[in-house]
Length: 391
Picture (cartoon, rainbow, N blue to C red):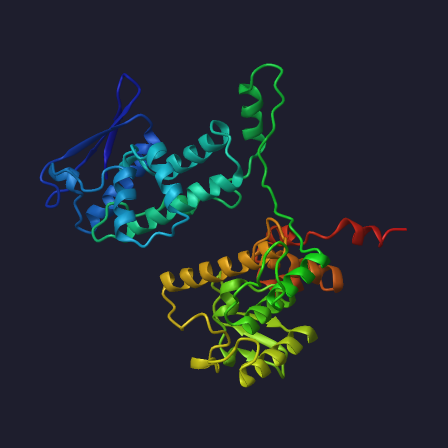
């Protein structure tokens, strides 16, 4: 076990000895006792396994800072395009931090600074923490890595939400007379209006968009229409739908069986009468080669034609991006401003709330939301519908 003493300056000196493993005793200096205890505990766990960090052998470690770890992560892992700008920002903000100082205390202090100093929104904080956590996950998996624990994975739920202490700091540090606005989560409440849904269906059916000379060229037109209907009737995620196999659909039981979802769990999704009707129509279109479905006969037992069954992360992301762009074209042509495919999940969930007497727990079973607070983000009931329930 490391020995320690506090110096007159207030800093702490730690000395680690390990006969037969370390060539000589090594000493470290930390500003806080807790930081030293945490670092030495991690170091001794490595020494117990016979792993000696390069810096203790007077060798320069390959990855000494967070910046080193970020660069290694970017060249070693197929990082999502959406993550790259975030990682570039992190490089400038925390790239110089030494990895040996990264522990849970550092993680807490960093998040606190993002709130109390940078005053970032909760969603931005989650993006920063999530991107860096994935980098640290990669670091812990490297052979003989001295980074054995990812402290960002230990942060509590709702770590990005501003609490009373954060709000107090913002008020105390604000210029006199300035009204302090504590950042809050901005919940998206975009709904699909009836006239917008009608316009989308017309575009998918081949109607020319306003101001254009010809209709959109839409490959697999019948599949696009069915996927749109399925999203509205079930609230399923895009990837959950386009990866469906025929064996996952039991029309007799009116159920789709999902083997693996975003949350990693299995889920059963009940089908409405409308979903069953649109599925039957889609099957007829495929069988007859109608509605642009020529050349597709449920190859490989798959329900939709865009995905080839390769479950690599790269292929799945490309397929998701392809379909997202396709529907973005359709929604734009239909005049649906600021509307994306994932908004159909919001719309479907809200419709279940509006049209049924199911409990929140029952709806969560259908949509796959684990956190009731997250489910409430999708339950954006129209004020006019609520008004009709009042006296």
